[in-house]
Length: 367
Image 1 (tube, rainbow, N blue to C red):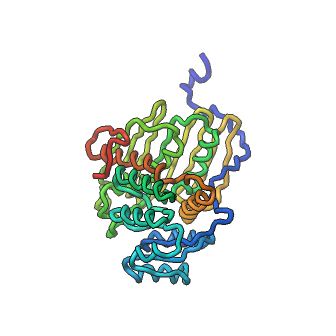
Image 2: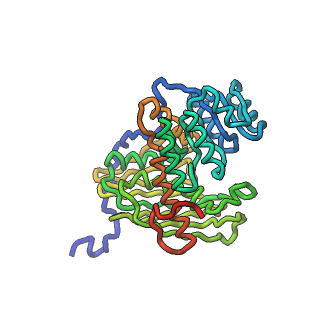
Image 3: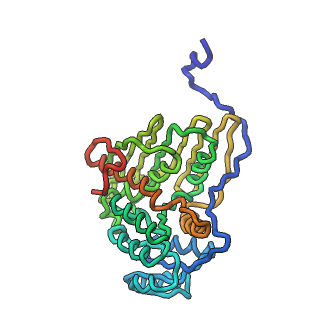
């Protein structure tokens, strides 16, 4: 009988030798020389993060539009004093802006994206860029017809820990991915009293779409089905369920996502990606500050990551779009690519309502 058989395999088996951390390209990129005028449509709360990131990166925002003029004027005064202000998007789209950042609410976002594409503007749409897969496919086709690029603000792709894990997979360090596990405990009560508190599927769609999107960046095969559930936390103040989980099944692989948005006394975020050649895990007290550890056959690497989800996530989404325009290629976070993430999220939401597994792509819209 071997030692493993006597101990049921319990104990340390991988080497604990410390090795140098691979230098992976997880940080935002900027174009070499392309510096177009950028317009912002919708000047709500989240755009503070957009504009802070753009200003730090040196991007040129020359126009802002919001139906409430005071909102646009406040953003202009804080970030880009020389920008023009509009209350009509048609007027902004008639200017010389080449790229439009659309941060309007999801229920009105689709027609705004379509208008911007028809005006010949490249578009970065806030996530989700569509609430209906058919509409999303039409917008992708429209962008192709207008010969402009349509990208989605999936800013989690440039969260340093998620970006580093994605690059470890992309460069083959982990081999074939077999499992992904993400467990998040955080306090989402800041949404109480806001429009988000009236949003169905707040956790499994508006929030978890970042993690469904992450799955699409680390698995090179389609998901077979999704099984999900939601529940109210005993002490929550939110109108929407704050507890959710989803199991995503692939051929020879699976992912488990678990969310607790009503954890005011303890916050922790842990993500693990396991493959045939190695594993990587990240953990921290929030989504911004994360410690990452890479486990390979030759040893353990502990990269010291720079930056944070805020503002790097917003720098990354705009930077990647600008680089794609300059390099005449499709952006990594294109709307075409993002349809896969939306299909996973839609399937999870439907499963949480029916109690039955759902195949991604069969559920065409949020209910």
